[in-house]
Length: 157
Image (cartoon, rainbow, N blue to C red; front, side, top):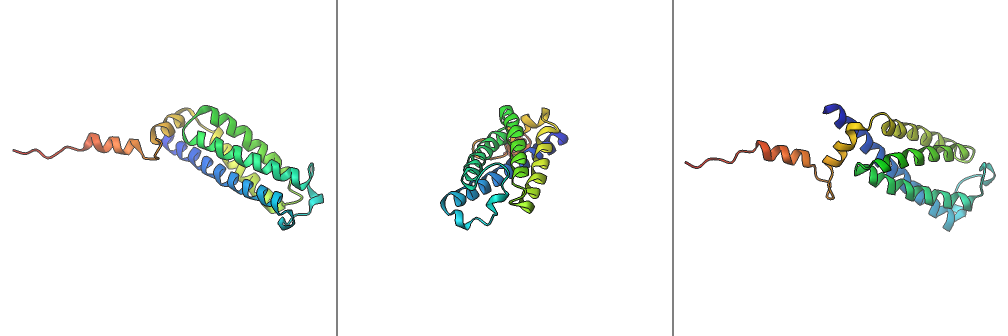
């Protein structure tokens, strides 16, 4: 059981990192759309697209990353498969932007690799642990149940 709980922690880490990267992508996409003069990038270094297309790509990928990570935190299998695809596409997007953002792109590729490892290494017991540990309010049901089972009210004689 400790092994599956530790992998549930890895998947939760992957989901939180996906939320962070998704929020950064949305923020960067909004800035690139609204105030493209504030984006510090050599626009001719993009491999495939111009700055406006890149901004829309960032907005859409950021929203997909955040929505999929919510499904991961709920222990949904569809979210795991979708997250693997989205994170792989995100890594490919970073390769496409490595000329424009070299340090950021390399850091994101490394983070995407860690997230892919967390999502692909083990899932069998992780799904149950994530679904068991989390409810709509984020409380830990395992700990509350174990406290209820071990608690013995005092006897009045």
